[in-house]
Image (cartoon, rainbow, N blue to C red):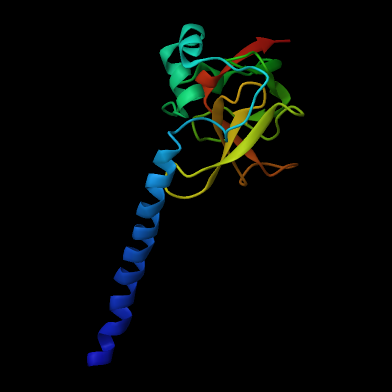
Length: 169
């Protein structure tokens, strides 16, 4: 009987150890300040005050503070015209409309960015690694990329609509 509780004790212990590891990583993520992209120089560099003048409050929160908009709130999620999606911070061309698809997530989704348009970094904001997508020109946070998208790339670039604007063809 004494050995019978070992298996049941392992699950809570493993769960506890997992949560402790996640908890230990949160201060590291917080120390990064929730800022966008890994520290590097970008062609478009402005002070926080300059970004605040250029962007709406929502755009600033997403692009400069790595925020996330609520799903199904962006008009760009329903955008079906031919054209180009641009960074709302610096007008960098990010995605062609031909690569947009309905992922069912509530955010504009694409299977491929334009060449050289975006960069990626590792985001630990939720306590586990995710691949953050940022604008290659200004470093603004756009969203995340996942490996559950359609062919031919298998990628789902899940973007915040407020981080982008749309220019019809």
